[in-house]
Image (cartoon, rainbow, N blue to C red; front, side, top):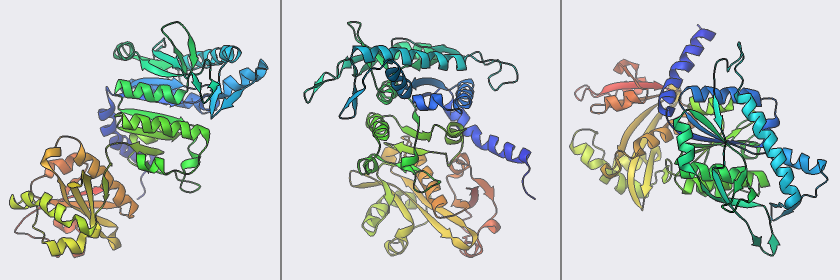
Length: 435
């Protein structure tokens, strides 16, 4: 029988609970352009932001105002000048920038203040705080061009922002910065968001933008990007280049997760954060760095990594010859030319089931999240292979796999071919997880 809407809701809510628990008390920096603010789905996005806040996520919002600024410039008949993709902000243009940014900021604060009965934000009572938290400096003269009041971020008042977050406020930052001498500078919202996420040591930096350029085909975006991938990207729009540059800078400076979402897709934020597959593109500096499919040259490193576990009886012994024949199923984590992690998926294509096996992390890297990162990588690999379930056989690490969503099962639940190879003398426990 097909699941009813009630069952689907319960299933989704239960599956989202680990994320709810993991995100509580964490700091997310969320940035969106003026295009998103002007879109009809922005009110729904505000409701989703309110929901995150109610779940205990500490939120810093960084808004842009590019279309609103351009409209104000046209209204005031002020000429717009760009050189090398950067706006030159003279005194007249700066006045238009301040007017447009102020209007956008007030509109956002108004939406976050909604508490009408029978609305998604009924009784939310959200406090929004803004201020002069961004210290900026002028871009100055570059290649002979004076950019005047166009600036770049110098530092973020992290202590001031953290105090407001700890007191239950959502912090709202605009693309304006201030110098110690009292000058105002026009900034890129992407730069402000990246600097803020970096200096606050945020858990996530989320860009809500137009990600159509990153779609593999008409319907699906690239799910993952590494810094190496970004460097190899073909020519992109000025807007996407700014976004990827900000994301890459944040990656290099320690932000663990950067998400690129379609700002005009209703519910994209919640789908990305509370479902395994997400809805956008993930950029990660650490988790999958050095993670790749194994090759025959890796056999020696894998054997050295798993030898202590085989001696302790945690793993079944594998000969070099067997490992060489099965190397195509393995994934490794390499650091400084050393294999520090490995795992394998043996698919049973007819049943669309796979065995997750030989999961190992070098002891020097225990407690650093490498095992969790490798596990997430293998989940994505299993999905890529079209598998619907994963199973594991284990004698020592049952709790770890249970924490990862695996459930205890009988050997009879294994694929028929695998049942024939089950070692009843070893008496491994069987755990299965749906994908």
